[in-house]
Image (tube, rainbow, N blue to C red; front, side, top):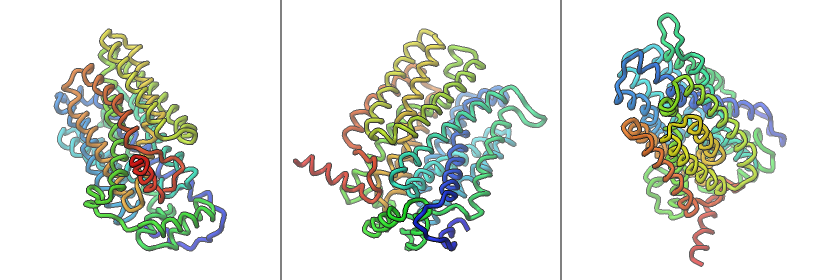
Length: 463
């Protein structure tokens, strides 16, 4: 069984093993890859779906935004589920749903059935993204946590690239009984199927923090010795024994009487919601349609293949280099400033009909997001929240992120492009002072010591 991995007899040596780390990275990265693919493929598929199914504007809005609607529910549900049955069984469930939804879309031609499957797909994407970030934060050594968690953003972007490339290759091509857009979704079913098969073998370790929450300290010790040194494992166990490990109910997470926990949650919500307000998911979902107004559809699809590759490269640099070298806050300040300026530039050239300049501006926007706000979307919440509220608090913050994206995707088709992009630019600019005011620095801080960040902040304020 997946959740019983810790009961397998293992030698608790002082040398950490390589294969559990590889399995953890593979399972979480492929989950993120599958989620990224589903987020981008709709940008190409919707072009063919409109022509093939005769979709109206309101139907396009619902199909595109359905993933965000389901993502809101999935993200909010994942925290409770992960605390109840474990992080790994939650990943089994969300990847199973992702597989089934992708197959169902691929064999459907009815608008309402497709919409329902897209909602289920969104449920899986939202739950998967929220669970992966918590799981990676809890199984990674302190010195490697920033890189490990931010690799989720790398593989989401790899999935985005794969989605755009697959869409570009399949656009206008079909097989007997399958239109091009159906083939695009069918390809997306491969990745979650692989993850489910690996997880069901029972060889991927569960989170040591989950084991401690459920009173299984020896299992927690075994996993820690597999992924970090004996010294760090013992230090982590000691910190977890000293820290409150009881899981808080939703009422105490959302409306905590503890002022420090309220500040933790507010900081997590601000960072994740500011990332959504920049409009990156709108650009991903509708970007090809937007650029089609200033260039041909084929050119727009090709442009987004290049833009997604540039974003992937920037994300790798951000995760491998920037999250290790620079403070979280500084990355967020630079990222949101760059996004604001690039979006304002895009609006200027869009009104002039300059397709090349618009593409360059969107490239700068993508790169700015990838250097800071993207990786920290998944990294900051698990770092700033304590053990008792990490799972539910992270999923609450991510759920609000999905909620904002849902509203943006629903409304965008009915708003002028210049107006919407200008609003995103203004939100990115406003994010800088807001993050400065409420989000403390979490780089190299132990997960069990995050409360001290807010204690020190309160003392400084009082002084």
